[in-house]
Length: 239
Image 1 (spheres, rainbow, N blue to C red):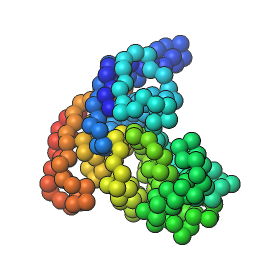
Image 2: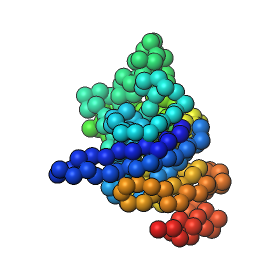
Image 3: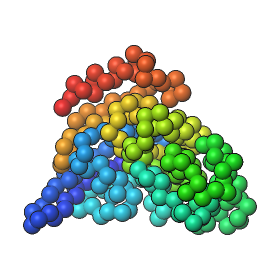
Image 4: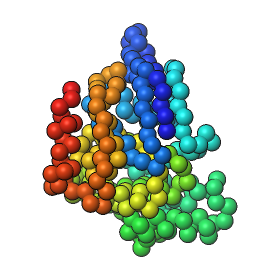
């Protein structure tokens, strides 16, 4: 995915607020790029633009597929339909792509099994804990056959132990089915554990102040590993 010189401004109280000004970023196919920056700098605006939810003023975006519906969006909250079972919450998004109901259920169950929720497939979201609902959302995002995934702080509202459990669930699914992924987070630890490239962002208008690759295989990463933590020095050296 290539983002080339994107500009975006909003009118606020009679003034023009510049959020993105000539912003460019390249994400290698099948890799995860983590965007880490201050609140309000423009991270979510960028995701909304990439997800087709917001228009941009100028610039160009090139992705692996130009087809409509080529993006899977994982939000901070699960956004599940409360009147459907968790199985049907996944099969319903597969209708445009898979005609046969049995095949839709098979694909949904495959991903529910990977996040260890297959035995709860007949329950509704209200019957699950917050962490379980977010695991359903993660399974749904992978079940949806899109080449590009956008993650908008999906673990932010959870306590620490649950957050790392979900990071592990996401990593497991990603290793099985690699997608080009843009991951917004405030947590540098999450970025170090998941990303192939970490991008540090400035205040609005958003620009890249520093970026660095992480070459350690995801399954071998630990926040106790000096080799991984050495990236923190590099990260905090730049403003």
